[in-house]
Image (cartoon, rainbow, N blue to C red; front, top):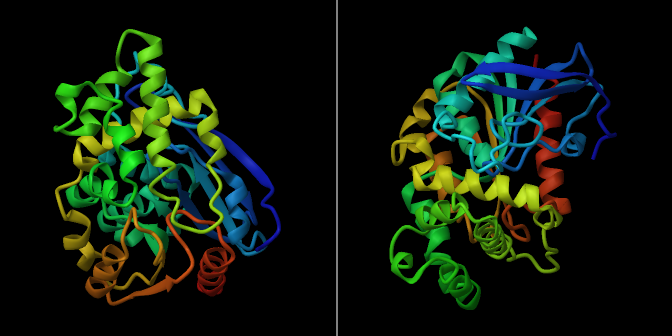
Length: 317
């Protein structure tokens, strides 16, 4: 890993609809531009993750997507309307930030949900993307969502039963994201808090396929739990605001954009067939499968593979 990035600029960008998006820039002001798209939806940016970039060679841009992190309004407030928080809005925000910062083209790094957002952005603005580096790759399909909401119960049956039983009996055979979204909008704060806890407990379960996995400390924060649960349920119940299979069908739009897809074979919550299919449809992409890594893991192999891809692209201007 590289030295810690030193931020040299930050601000709030008015993206319309009453939203202000927080952004931060670090590294070399004259370096190769790169933007980091975080996961979730709703995780918020983590500038400490910039250590996969060489700060002497990259101008590194972070942003908190609508409703999370330091962006406003905060989606953890149940009165905040989420109707203007969609994939189309987030893609437009990324493009508006590029223009605001005076960047012509930039490398896009995305993880988990951030990889889906990166693909959507690149397919709609291919001339603005120099390279893509994606890890823990997800494609935002209906099948992907249903896999986590129900099928992963075959791997973690007791934990999934607790997750399912967190909603009223009448809702247990329907869309669990819908049911949890209703609970998270309940007028009773105790109902909302329990729903956020139950949702995040399941989120922290279906990624625990790597030996030695430690619970995600972010879920201990009640504010983070609420933001994360509200935004994930919002996106999942709407199919990630993508036409089903859109990102795979649109892979031809990435022609000429070099890419590296880094994925763990132990990533059961986002199986490797997704990035494999994407690599087949996108000849300019290279798929790196790691035997000992799971979803979103920060093991040495995952970090090394992402760092190596970024070091390789740093020389291309």
